[in-house]
Length: 374
Image 1 (cartoon, one colour):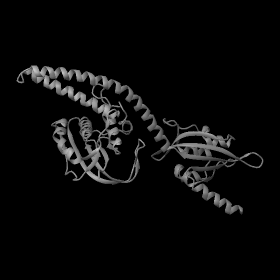
Image 2: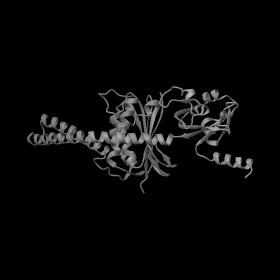
Image 3: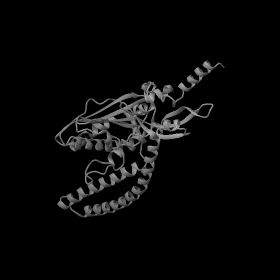
Image 4: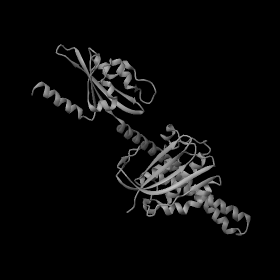
């Protein structure tokens, strides 16, 4: 095959690769070739006639997990120009407003005399791989947490059962019109609520299977409206626009109230007991997506439940962690940090997802998507 057609064929082959390929000439220190993926990652300015040192500044490469610029002399392609084979590094590439974790591997290309003529570098976008690794770490953390918490919850449940038995015995011996009977009735309700919370925790830890059945989400919100308004207090107005009819989802009916209570309680605190909350339900079609936790959602219709407040909003840093177990911005005496992690775990178990939309100083909207029940 003639040289020029062969070169053209090789260029087309490299352009179709899903990884970036970038070649620098040693003598001039300027770019020689970049395939389409490399241009997409690094920007077309990398093919400008600029020295290698300037190009490394254009890359805006940072040490992963920090704001420290990746050392220029440790860039794999510069090490390859010095003759090192298989020079490798992981870095965070920042171009404009986008951060992309990449793995870079570079090696020298020698001339007939064994001298370095070029350096070739490959760039691999490892965003998906990092998401999978984060998901695996989260699963390991939840597994360990589940083993410890399940034992504590089991023992606490036994204690509550004993307390409830004594309360029931005492109630049977007291006149119903006595003040002691009223006090014990309230104590009984509190203990039963404690048992319900333990049950919810065990459900989240998969010690009690969730019961996903066909349920009317709009009807569930209508039934809970009075309770949710009392939870918000008189200073917050709750608006529930006309709810979509036929918003049937495959979900655990008992868990729907817990999710609404969690989200409404968070909104109340964000608005500092003064403001407006809007709850709405509809049905939308979604494209196939992969959630931040690695869950693959197919394309199709989903029941869309949104809870929007006009509170202080959530910063980007906090948004990245709000679903982590035990993460909370509240005083340790006022929150456990399990509320939103429970919400996420239950919804994902049903094949749905949660998305957060927030602007500092303007408010937050939680979007919940649940598979439509046929």
